[in-house]
Length: 294
Ligand code: R5P
Image 1 (cartoon, rainbow, N blue to C red):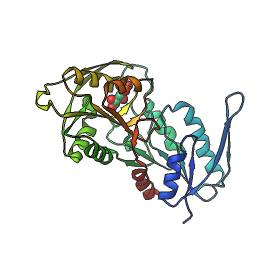
Image 2: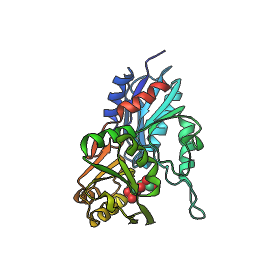
Image 3: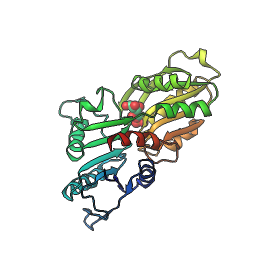
């Protein structure tokens, strides 16, 4: 068996180094740059022939990243790689999982088809599964999913006194209940109505029995940040101390992190997406799943 070649796409060097160490892989190099007209130049500086090639590419803000990734996967095959694996700690395009209005693209399905055609297998962390029971519902390749829940629970148990976990909406119950059980804490779920990409309303149930506890808002994704911000605002208005906000994937698509920080006791995330709030390292959990594939 040959040593797997681990190749980061730009911005993914730290995780690539951790995985090289954890799975005894070899670090490979890909040269990329943009031509003056914006098209991508790419060259393998390490020969992928007869190797298992593992590309590391987290897929927040995905559109400029995806075409180079597909070029890399296809070129690896053309140059003789025997297996092409994608490690995408954040897997994009999972939330448009339904045609909400006539004529809309169900981008989760199209994106899954593209990735499934380009790669033999995929490792990711807590993909946003709402209407799909598992990645296998739309991905046709082998998928390994690492779970951040044990790590979030460990961080909360070690850093928050008298926590009560709060999910901002019904979709979050799956994460929050699991994290709460592992942290030995109570949990509650709020109600959310979404009126637009950056417009949500949060309704709080009766939480008077939890006064004096530290609220810990837990969600899988912070995107525009409105969900966490509105939930934190409502909790403070109810007389709770500033909540600790914990997310798996810190997209912070707009500059909402400052607004959230002003409301929260602390904002904490895993390093699936590089962000100043990163405090929980998922590289060992990813390495364990990658090891199964290679
Ligand atoms: C719901 O679909 C997700 O679990 C998150 O609650 C959502 O993506 C957060 O989005 P935003 O930060 O834009 O409110």
